Length: 183
Image (cartoon, rainbow, N blue to C red; front, side):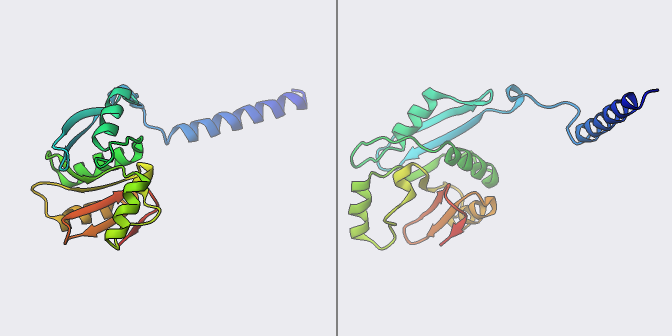
């Protein structure tokens, strides 16, 4: 056999062996998105009285109509300004709900906050960050009926998915999709 064919054969066998090794770490049957369960969220906005239970992700995509409903429910209730909510925040809440083993709605204290509302709140209390992630649709203040606030905090911390603030005197937990931190 000419030396060129031997090199090609060795190269082919090497590539084939690498492919087999790489393929061995992949599950035999990869689950398509359509087999992944839909993601559902349930909210009760304590300031407006509005409630929403919706599937927001299904078949591998976020559902635009559901996202519009969520953006409305989590709007700045003081100004009615709407801002897109970070889908990662919704996924964090879905994971938190599962970790809490709860079917109760998230009671919403604060979702999106306009810069004007944030500035006004900062004059009233020390607990409002000047560059709050609420103004980017990346944070929410919540509680969960039937779950002790400390347990909600511990579950959120265990996810290591962003910031977690604990406000027992105000009766809520803050979660966001910023860097992992706690206060």
